[in-house]
Image (tube, rainbow, N blue to C red):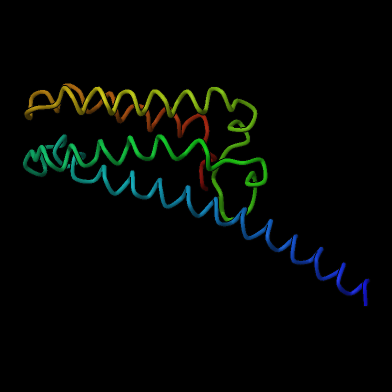
Amino acid sequence: MIRAIIAAAVIATGATVVFAQGDVIAQRRDVMKSVGGATKDPGGMLKGETAFDLAKVQKALATYQDAAKKMPGLFPDTSKTGGETTAAPKIWDDMAGFKAAFQKFEADAVKASAEIKDEASFKANFPAVLKNCGGCHETYRVKKS
């Protein structure tokens, strides 16, 4: 009887670790999807496909700031694999650099939020914020085939 209880406890613990790992991977995927979704309208504005809308730009920048705060905490050692993650091993090899990248992303979004008042200031400031995305993805993300 005791062996059965111990075996059940071990299995439950293992299942909890797997669930928690998958959950954090899903959380970071959701945060990144929110960043991608928030970038759609400002991206169209930069390309001249949609009219400038300061409220949408500010909303995107707020989303970036929120994501930059959340993302570094969503990479525990237990989430290196599984859950269809595209997180590169470099994240855990260079956690300080990874966290610094998100701090820069947040700082650039805060700065842009304060400086963007019209279409001209948007076009001058928003691309610098977006450069953070590409730089981080090049270094800390495994490219899908």
